[in-house]
Amino acid sequence: MLIKRITIILLLSFVLYLFIISIANLSDIYNSAGKDFFADNGFYDTGSLNLVTAIYLDYRLFDSLFEAGILLITVSGIMWISEYNILTKNAPLMLDKQKTSELFITFSRLLYPIMFLFGIYIITNGHLSPGGGFQGGAIVATAVLILYYIDISKSMDVNKLLNIEKILFILLVSIAFISLLTRNEVFTNFVPLDGSTELKSIYLILLNLIIGTKVAIGLIAIFTVFLKEGR
Amino acid sequence: MNPILSFIVILIGVFGLATSKNIIKSIFCVSIIEVGTILLFLNFGMYEGGSIPILNSIGIEIVDPLPQAIMITTIIIGSTITSLGLMLSVKIFHHYGSIEWKTVLKRDI
Image 1 (cartoon, one colour):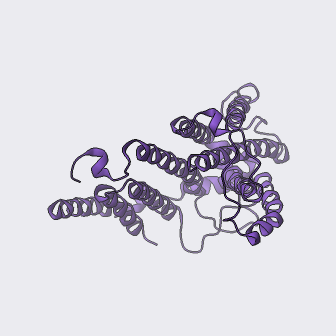
Image 2: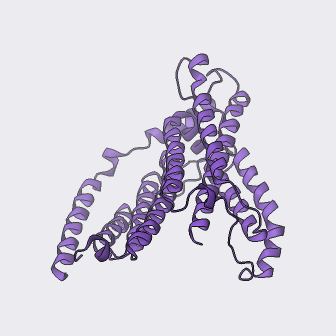
Image 3: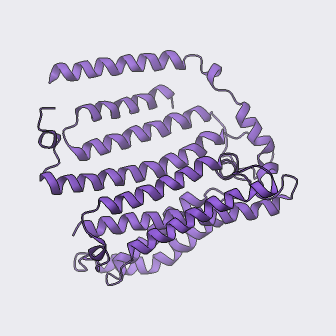
């Protein structure tokens, strides 16, 4: 037991030594050429002041598509692994109202519209200020999950949520493919490269809205399945 | 903030993954590896005095936006992987009646 742990520590320190050697000349493997390129061309290519949004919605949209696909596959996997069948999944929730304090319920009622609006603000302003589809979707999901504490009699149809998410993913891929007709290349902005930046931001807002809705619905579905599993 | 420190965080996660006796603790260790990866990537793009990568005012030196854009996807995928692992552990608990690796694998760790 002890020998095994000492062996693991020795192996890991050897890996750390290899890492320190490889990181010694950092300027050989990493320089600021990419940063300068994004700072010079990012706004005119994509119409986004937020360069992170410019990368994950335009330059590297392929990554974001697979990320959205992984979220969809994981939600379906969790619902498939879960013990109960569809009929029991749609049964009303068993959150005990006696255990939730009245103070928390009252303040949640005041707070959840503000959280909802703030999430939508972050999604729609993702190309101008910090934020975007992924972060705003998480905030919207949190605002909807607070509703479970306020009114336990309402429940969500998990199967319908999964169907909406599938439709949104198909919409996302088809919008990403429109640029094949206008720009002659896939997975980029459908406004031509010499168009104005205001026109280009239409595409960014549209894709941020779809990704935000998709992330919010995915997180709500995951939480609902866990809540019903824990009865 | 040093890349070596964030790599040590990753190695702590690997050590915990190799020695932990509980399935929940193993899932925590996967999360620790993920956090170390995020720190490592953000260290590469970051330098002293750089501002956030938003071009609101002209003439400001920004940090590299590429690692941040990649790490957004890492955070979402990490949360989904954690929830998938927790759901699998619930299933394992229903089947074996325990979430110790010793009982599940029937051997000494």
